[in-house]
Length: 449
Ligand code: ASP
Ligand code: MG
Image 1 (cartoon, protein in one colour):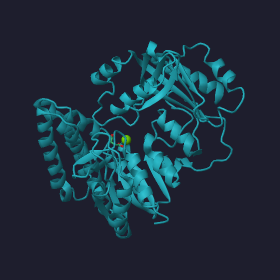
Image 2 (cartoon, rainbow, N blue to C red):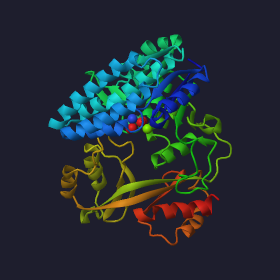
Image 3 (tube, rainbow, N blue to C red):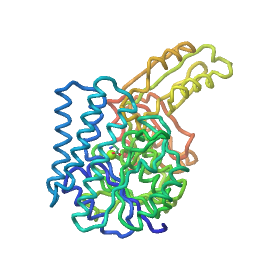
Image 4 (cartoon, helix red, strand yellow):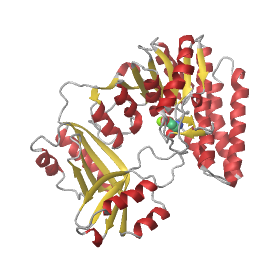
């Protein structure tokens, strides 16, 4: 499937009938778009997560009515809304039943089953909308091919199984029709529904792109590409027209919200360019993330990640000892925690917890059992409400003068932690949360404007 494009539309691009029509126009404007991956309509996943957390009857009715309103608003604009009404109603009944169960006892598996209805409904609506425009579109349940492990809420895909299943079941369908399928959801070996973590639809699109040997993955969202930093913080931020995989991956990891951090893994692995653009204004262009870019600049972008937790572990036993780090990392690994930044001194380690691609249920990483286990080894100190500012660039660790330029700008700010040197693509600061935006503004105006 050499020329195939997988196009993904995020929640705002399928939020209502107008947004869906714009997205349909984009799909139809390029005959190579054969597979379309959708998020749930904006807001629906959040509402479903509320239900999955368990709420009383009154709240349940209110939340389900809200979901019904969002989906009916789209349904009612179709020429023949009743073709689909029964099916949407059946989904809403399922949601009701599952949310009653969640009110009695929540579980990660139940949460995933419940939240999957957002993507199931948006894809049903989109297929019908295309059909009523005389397009040969077909609904495809991605759970038939998106095989994952059973880590509900943040499941990991089995890419080999996905490849085989996609070749057998999806490829033949793309020759017949435009396939509309769900982002974010999958299924484990026993057939139970799983999810890839919040924002996981981008990841789904890239995984399907890989499994189909696609020529490109297009991510349609509500911003026309990737910017030098968040334009809401710095209005002078500029759009980047072309960016390398590794720089874009650093940006996604360090908080640029445009792409889910895992999206670029399959893209890099299989060398599939990823385009990011706005479905509201496709003619505005966007950013192409690809293998090579011309003359990558020293400073490329600034990413900001809020709500960071810094954990400092003190142990006198660490003095001249061996194996302390191994023990700490062993504990973290058993608790499924991935460490982000790290610095060490003679008797202590400071590290931040990786919260990217957070769990669908929104559960905190710092559990009492983790803290208890760590406390048996060392003294644990936890600081919250910090922010991570990452300067993304190229050859940062081999260029001269980077420190002077950057630290000069940081003069008025307290820096809680610095990481530099492990990657030539980033220099990270941990700063107090309340300073974060000013740090970004100062760095942007000095290094990018
Ligand atoms: N609907 C899911 C979410 O809101 C997945 C996605 O939008 O990518 O997290
Ligand atoms: Mg999204």
